[in-house]
Amino acid sequence: MSRVGLSDMLKQAQKLQEQFQQAQEGLINLRAEGSAGGGMVTAIANGKQEILQLRIDKQAVDPNDLELLEDLVVAAVNQALSKAQELASAEMSKAAGSVLSSLPGNLKIPGTES
Image (cartoon, rainbow, N blue to C red; front, side, top):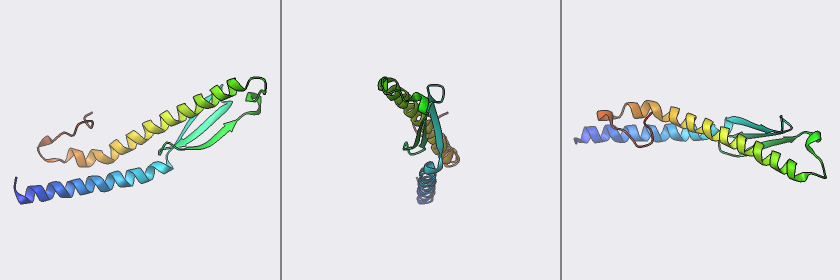
């Protein structure tokens, strides 16, 4: 491999790293919502897998059945986190797509094939 080819590959790698960094910083602005119990419990997460908000309808609060409320909270949070993870994966794939498609020799990186 020539020095010019290696230099080009290093530039492409640096560009890819910058795009990944920008995409990761943008994950904090993504929002995903999960709900349970017909919307009685709702959780909102960002693309960094952080729960930002949890709403519980008064009707879901029964002091004699806290186990049901706990189950609803867990279900809503898990749904929000799952959706946030899907959004984050899509954003990261999008960020890498243009650089990966321009790699020389149709080089494939494991886990990026569609």
